[in-house]
Length: 112
Image 1 (spheres, rainbow, N blue to C red):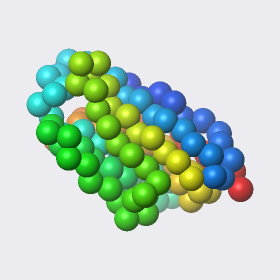
Image 2: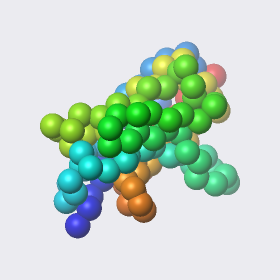
Image 3: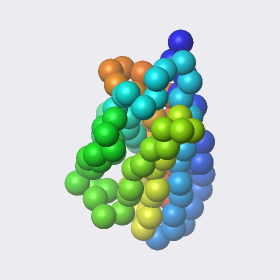
Image 4: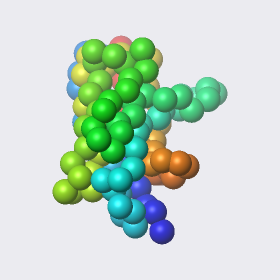
């Protein structure tokens, strides 16, 4: 059974940084594309960033240059480094594994 457990969310002021982590179990982590999505209140869940099994990243335009996705296959862990945070980045952030596996989410709140 695939399990994805996120951590690292919290409250931060605009311009600050956070690093999210997602630990995967029950899966061959290195073989799968992984990613981060986010959902703000009243809005749909949107892509933030993905990373292929080979380490190729892909970002939503809204986070390019500010966020960085990475993976440590030895630790079965996915990361999202978020810098220069804005109030509009406030959302629940979800870890994703190809094709349709999700974590429980971690709240990120950016105050102005």
